[in-house]
Length: 57
Image 1 (cartoon, rainbow, N blue to C red):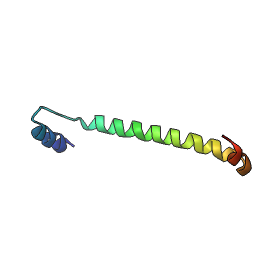
Image 2: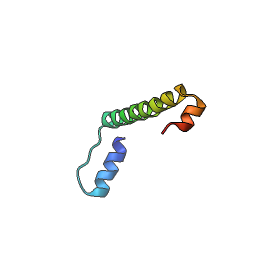
Image 3: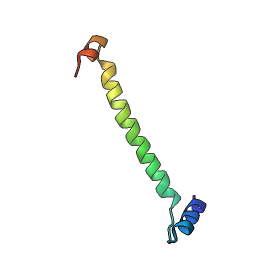
């Protein structure tokens, strides 16, 4: 991770440093959001019967 930030700072011509903890927090948060907003509609749809799910808008 530090190697990637070092190479990108050389290529960009500026002083860039990316902390590994920041990357892991961002990945964890995006995974949490994806799971929550993927599971919630799926559970709601699973509670409906097939005919009601097709009729529901």
